[in-house]
Amino acid sequence: MSKRSQPAWSPPVRNKERPVLKLYNSLSRQKEEFIPANGNRVNWYSCGPTVYDASHMGHARIAASVKALKVAIESKDNERIKNSRCDLLTSAKSPISDWLDYKYGETVTDNAIFTTLPRYWENEFHKDMKALNVLPPDVLTRVSEYVPKIIAYIQKIISNGFAYESNGSVYFNVSEFDGNERHHYARLVPEAYGDTKSLQEGEGDLTDDAAEKRSPNDFALWKRSKAGEPSWDSPWGAGRPGWHIECSAMASDVCQNKLDIHTGGVDLKFPHHDNELAQSEAHFDEPGWVNYFLHTGHLMIAGCKMSKSLKNFITISDALKRHTARQLRFGFLLHGWKETLDYSENTMEMAIQTEKQFNEFFLTVKDALRSGYDEGCGGGWEPEEQRLFAKLSMAKEQVHAALCDNIDTRGAIDALRELVCACHVYLRGARARPSPALAAAARYVTDVLHVFGVVEGPRGGIGFPVGDADGVSLEETVMPYLEALSAFRERVREAARAGQGGAVLALCDALRDRVLPDLGVRLEDKPDRTVVKLVSKEELLKEREEKKRLEAEKQRKKQELLEAQRLKEEQKKISPAEMFRKETDKYSKFDEKGLPTHDHEGKELSKGLLKKLQKLQQAQEKKYNEYLTSINTC
Image 1 (cartoon, rainbow, N blue to C red):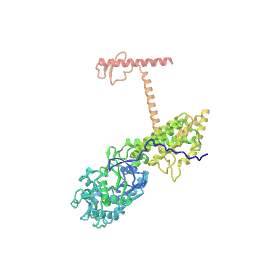
Image 2: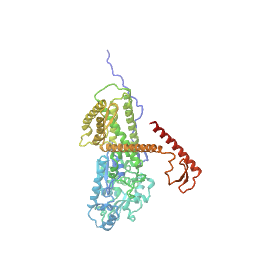
Image 3: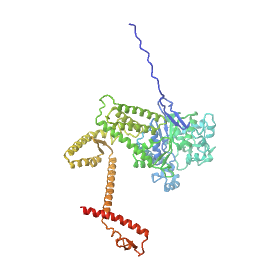
Image 4: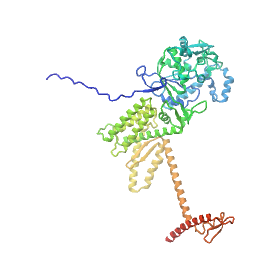
């Protein structure tokens, strides 16, 4: 027999292209394929808060939108601090603090006073982020700790010929930079070039010395400090960093000369982000400091643009008093990150209903799995299970495609909803049984929601954690006892039904309606068994109060109906000859049948009114005769 050789292998044919991640890039104003500059490592910088006051919902949205990958968030602890130091005594925006700043601000000489307040609000910001389940950044920087490097950064820009010193301040030379063939000013918003109003709004207090600039378009890299302002020594004299240079110096120090992603609010496009780009490219003297610039959309408060100056804003801590962190995150997820988001009752109601839909799904699936599913057991798949598994595979494709399409979290949530509906259809089927496909679907939904930040704690398991602490799952700890209690209750109910033991049934209902809800346990009676669900105590208490309210409303309507029926029966007992005689405030004379002929002033009634009263009397006569017939029959 001749030596045999291995036959040729034919590779499978790719039937369709897999979607690739595309992001809406403000630098091109369209979706672009995301290609990191260094393999799978992503250098991502996000503008951080100006920590002179409580963080607000705008900060929450940006932080929740940039949860993934590597983020270097800076904390601008010296930005605009001069007008905020009186927060140590009272509100920085109150007339008293403004007056104190005007009166005594120039007497401040210790820089330490400018770090006490920012450090307090920075800590509050981190508490808010933790409460929202926002992961901390890989690197966090503070302006006050970066001043020497900021000075060196500015010196490099000067040496490259794109900045100049004037009267102790340093300004970026926009015309020199834009006139260089390698560079371009206002890459993000080129139509804003020369918009002095936007420049002044962006510079704030840094625009008070226009005479020092060679052009109104130039902006401050370093500003000479006035009396009472924070200051550091520099080659140009005592001063402080400009607004935009802080971000460039800190991001460049951590990520060097290339950022894969830079994120921030859309309101910072010009001049802040455009100036960042210009001074960073001037520092490295090469274009392309940022490859992808992502801007989150405006945040509206009940239809109006959020504005701290107009007092139209909501702090994160206040928002968390009205809604849970999970509900807030669902509110963000149901909107595209670059779209305008209206924080309103309608928005949050959608978020609450979405959370409820997923939570009920998790509770139902976990109960079904506890009732008879063993992951170690095999067995053939029925057609219903095959269809559910096919739906799971389709959902995975849909979620992947949605997230590749500019991180479309709303589309991903919709795909998960469809999978949830398919699972409910499967569980309602006549031949439904707990299966690997059902468990896999629930775990997949949980895993995606965990990536989105709405499921806290470590990955793994099914559903939202309930009261977990110190790595201990409350559900896994108490569920065996609850199952035993549920089984006991079911046996008692069966025995009571057989013996007509109404009192025993009442006790069982009391256990369900009053005792267990106080422990955060919901029992649902089904035709063939009792379902156990572990829910937050607060939610169950709200449900119980709502049930009481509905029952009270039902009883009220019942009493109103009974009272109406009683009055109707009493009305039947009145003789038609007497029905009008008691109304002496309306009538003064009557005929032999008791029909009014004159009003209370002695005037004859009109023919039209007499005809109407006759019809009423005839109707009453019919009711009265029915009443007489009923009592004679008895």
